[in-house]
Image (cartoon, rainbow, N blue to C red; front, side, top):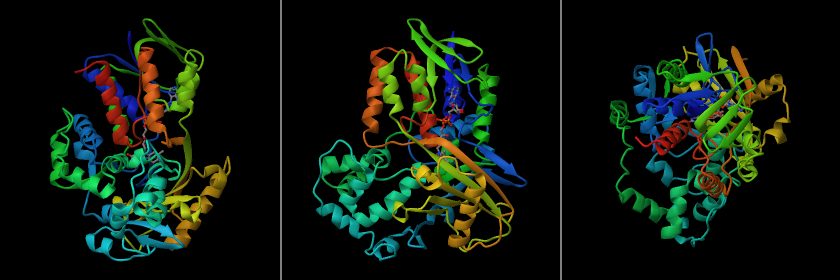
Length: 466
Ligand SMILES: Cc1cc2nc3c(=O)[nH]c(=O)nc-3n(C[C@H](O)[C@H](O)[C@H](O)COP(=O)(O)OP(=O)(O)OC[C@H]3O[C@@H](n4cnc5c(N)ncnc54)[C@H](O)[C@@H]3O)c2cc1C
């Protein structure tokens, strides 16, 4: 018997990798013919279009862990890092009232009033020190920031950031999604600023064992902020998959899991043509995709899983001839105040020069997909919309040399208010019923590439401690 991993996205493949590293068996079952899930890099002549994630962060708990994995897979030489001094890291813009505004990135810019703000950002500190504490278990990130730092910061910065990270609505997304430690600071100290100072004075938490890689040391010494890989981010899952196969793991493609049942000795998983028996199942399926598989045997668990919503995103990759941008930046985001289908535009060719041409990624829809784009928008309509935004906002009038239009259905889970409590109930159910099931993937403990790889590693360690 073996461990079964459902899904060959980055989390499923990582779980298989970590299982094999600890001398356990692993079979991965994937519904599509593709490796990497949402990580998809498509070469168009001599440029690269990223449909899903574009870059991975160095910072955070998961950053060192992913770099250790990259090194372990022999990909260190293919890494394309971007340092914290690079314009793609320092310069981020928002689009408000028909204008692009550079966000403050230095102490001086925090002290001066810059549109669209009517006060220096630093004045939010005084608001925070005056605002009373509101004792609460959870609330929306918008409510929290409006209460502590003011409406303008909530309207322009927070809604834009939430649209950029999870294509969601800041008024629905939980404060714990992006600002857990600031919320805890308020609950403990009555102020975000006081809490931040305490956090800064506190010793940094140690790295997880096995993640202090030479590559991470280099990243810290050279002050890398984000990175991709030569050939695109999909190189990571395809290399992982090759390594899984070399280590004796099996990856079965075009095999959607259609039934999952637990018994005393483990689990039985059915695809359309095969039945697999396993001692343990690691599911990286989106919670809503896993729910129907469990409905018959565990209806209460299925209901909780089905309660984690997702949103769809339209992605339009565009390549324009020559250098067309008049400023160097990561790109721009559009706050919810603008009520546009446009979530933001990434300036890919600023991050990674593309043979002298301008490469952009336009993202639209998200939480407002159906409202703005309908249920099944035609690719030409999405292309026209994207080209229109680029023409109006970035003043690029020429038609693109090439393009790629994709609709990513239900691609990003939404950690709405109450998400953390729901995930705790889900985990409690699994543990109380002693189900041989580990829930990994982006529906539960973080939506970034680093988060889901780390979650896979922790799940493997929990089942079989090293
Ligand atoms: C547009 C976009 C931009 C993003 N940008 C960034 C970024 O810049 N940086 C970053 O860190 N993160 C980013 N993310 C998030 C990141 O890409 C995802 O969190 C991550 O790729 C999720 O990986 P996963 O393996 O958990 O899930 P998935 O990629 O969803 O993989 C799940 C796999 O399960 C398979 N599957 C589904 N149902 C079944 C079934 N019944 N049986 C068998 N297999 C099944 C699917 O086909 C899929 O291959 C972005 C995501 C999107 C969508």
